[in-house]
Image (cartoon, rainbow, N blue to C red; front, side, top):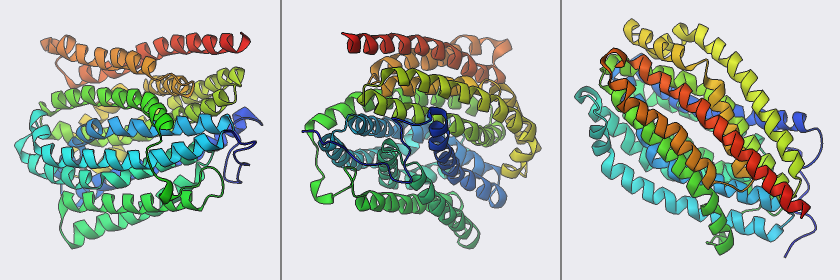
Length: 460
């Protein structure tokens, strides 16, 4: 059963189906960029506080966990992508019942996923670290951080699923406001737990978990207060068959793709670990700094995903091509400008993270010099992936990305990197830009094919 209208856009919501496309894309994306930066600042605050008060080993211990936690968590974060696309397409199609069922299926999916992640993560944290050749000097610190992080997975997943729903409805400002509140709490607790209670990495992990809990409660409360089809009613939570199938169809390939990315990053991190804890510290700090470019560009991935999702639901296929072009042009321009700014500011920024090791700062600059400039290619690749998923196609970008990103990086490590003359950190970093370029070009071709299929179906 369809309703005549799902909801009228709230003042905080962007109209994705009409109006000035470029203006609405920018208005929609800016809060996502700021939200992503705040999420990064959670981890940045962890690194800066332990770097200032605990030393470079603690920075290496926290930074070393990123690729492992991403490997475990990203499979299920992908399901939040499936939830967002399912809601966006239902809104575009004016199907109130489909919106309601998708939302009330997404929340229990997040809870069940978090239970699985918590059990696996806490049980195998130290095993994962050993498999990554983590130095004995930091393995215990890394394990402590990971166990506390995994214990708070339910808050992270609930926030991500609910934020995806709000963004699918056109509201990108509410998730930003909630993260500002949580971010302030995180920084305050970081300082208290580390300086007053001397908890080292356990303190920053606990602070992050508590702050994520706050953001999860706020975003759930926001959905409960809505007065449209996106309103959350706890008594209606269950697994509805059709939206669950669609969430899994779109979300599982997205999650598998992210997990495969993480596997390639774990292999790269293991290779980096072989160069010692000083390089690990510089790499961790540089990686966090690069993250500010990544989240800025990745925001357009989410924009393409939801704008195209709603327009596909409304069968406005020609508009989807314009959305892709505008998002690609935006990430190219912002990527080049952002990379230049971060590279020239690199030494000062790295010194904030690692005040006690000039050598680690130098290694951080090596990473920035290799990765900053081609980052626009990463953004263009992600936007095209989002566009394909917004069209309802998720397996194709998964396969392209696994072969193009993971295949190239892993193949690079076991071939080129093994040559003595190229057995350097720089050689490892070059694999990123090459994999981004190849994958983007193939995904762009895939979008053209999927787009033609949709427009031909409409004509027939």
